[in-house]
Amino acid sequence: MAYQIGTDASSVQLRLFSLARLDRFAVRARGADALPPWQRRLVRHAAFSAYRDCVALGLADEARQVIAGDVPPAPQLLAHG
Image (cartoon, rainbow, N blue to C red; front, side, top):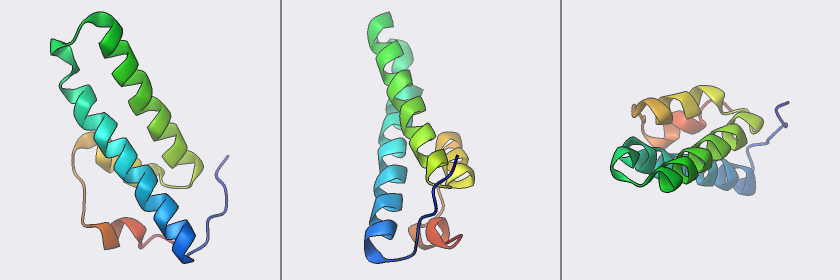
């Protein structure tokens, strides 16, 4: 279920934070093959959790772009208000 997120400053900051968090974990997950199995699971779980947070905020399309490594500039990410 997606929550209704407004366009006020705190909502925009939450959306940016959530996408940046997902990006950090997605980058780590892409390089996880060199890690021990327990660390791979941890990194991938963190990325999935961050992805689900973005989906809950109504950022599913943007989150998929981040996961794919195709991240547009920040104003485009927030345009879907």
